[in-house]
Image 1 (spheres, one colour):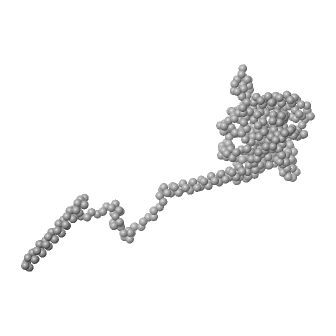
Image 2 (cartoon, one colour):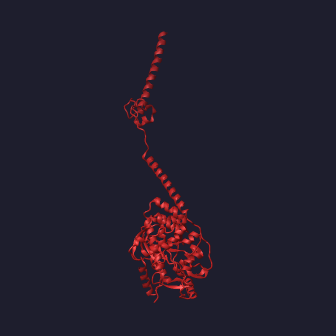
Image 3 (cartoon, rainbow, N blue to C red):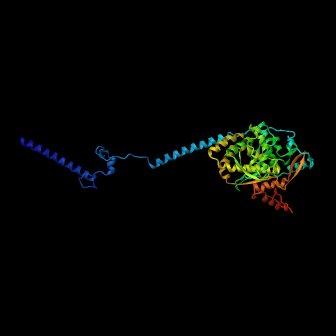
Length: 460
């Protein structure tokens, strides 16, 4: 019985052993099949990619003795930060420029003088003559009326900007009134030809003012209707478009000259003596001591009245030089002096530092009345350095040989050939002529063939 039990147990044990062996063999086959790329029965070493993906195979940081480098900003990030800083600085600069621009333009006097003076414009008794009238006033006014009625359209160009510079009389500045303007000059900027033309208009030119039914000198138009009416009269008689105006008083003129450090002028002995009268009037309004800034006679010792000496003039002296009328060829030389002074101011202003320029603007701008818009001023400022390189041309209207001296209402007046003088302005400001001689030559050539500047046609 005992032997039978033992045999049964052995048989069962053999079966269990065989089962374990079969399972082991089966598991080995499965393992071999899953690792067919490596040797049979060898567990493969995981690849670097598998080790990175499997946290079990990560190296122990405690065992890694190599010091790690700190990770810096990428090139892309550095570029972005640099661009950001540049943008912020740019915005700040723009803000400062815009702020300064509106600061300066805000100083300008933009008040429109809409006052209308009717009646006869006042005449300085010292300017009246005892000579008899040389032509009939009624006939002349009828002639000018007819001329105004047939006036063609005004010439204009997108390349040309005409700014009428009006110099207020010293007495008007002090009394805060509006009299007859002392200076009328058209500043023409031609961006195509790269020229700046200064055209002086002589104040004694006789015109008829239809709005007031009055014949009088050109400068009386300012007394009647201010800057805008004077502008209109110039457009009507000379056939050019006046785009804007700027009115300055004698205080601003002095400030400008003082800020640029004075100007150098060739002054004759007669002019130096003649400057004393207008300077005495200026000293009165400036509350200066009598005789202030008079030029010493010692400078001209042994010289004739026509002999000139180069002098450095301050603001008060430069104003007297520009206002001087009764030395030389009266108003003809006076307008020439005015152009010389302005040309020299432009030359000296190119040398100003930013600090000096700021000083100039703060002093002068509040004393300038203009209808220039902020946009137009911005455009002028942006192109200012280019304008300083432009050729400066000078012109006086009426030109010699194209007017007659007359007396009317006991006033000495100029009777211009408006057709010819209009053509001269157009040839120089809009055309290719550089001076009055070239303009006269062109006019004579065209007039010889009955050329009409208004229509562009020749008649035979």
